[in-house]
Length: 287
Ligand code: SF4
Ligand code: SF4
Image (cartoon, rainbow, N blue to C red):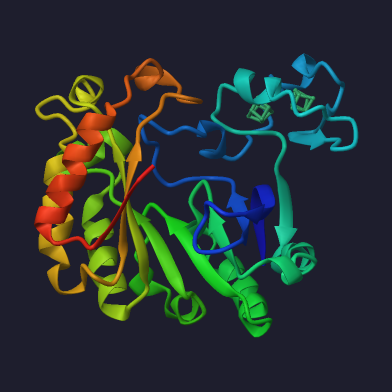
């Protein structure tokens, strides 16, 4: 099974517990207004816009396919900046076995692997194969997901997945749709399913300040207090079983209407943390 791989980080300490190899797939099923790596959202269409603009001559076109020469690429990322399609030409289509071969070199240094994106759950068969290989080698297997693919429909993947880090981007379904283009009924279903199955490692909330979030939704701002209260009420019996990560919005890498959006202040973040404590969350991290 193949997946489009955007990049791999051999040793990461920010993608789950301990030291892990992180794999980032290309392609996403939603498009968040505040996405900080929008170049992972879509697959390359082969339009060729980036090819002539590569200062290193690392790109060429073969029919409708862009060929990326990794050996001469200087990683300047100019191709990503000029791509009109929120894609990247620096993507490799790899078999799960080939990804595993690269990861296995890190075994002495890592406790597990985490697959992120883009949206990792768009590649369930690839993940099942990769996680089976990693699990057999004693590594823990984590997904970092936006929760917009129904995990209950992928029991084989869930059987080899240890934990999931789940984004909850808005609680109100209309606001969620306007922020991301997606449907948060699936996110809420996954939240319940993962909590009950003991597979929720952390719930991640990207915290916006009120001013930056206004305009994302026509009738309502993205209300972080509503998200915290909503998650707490939805999975009350399990609040001690997973971490709540409050992620400070930063506009680095963001394109479109939020590219000049302001970050919430530390004071605002601490107030959200206080609310989370009142709602019953036990382990809360601000990043
Ligand atoms: S990052 Fe893109 S534009 Fe820059 S050298 Fe590599 S392929 Fe060329
Ligand atoms: S990466 Fe973007 S600009 Fe380059 S060929 Fe693909 S779609 Fe076109």
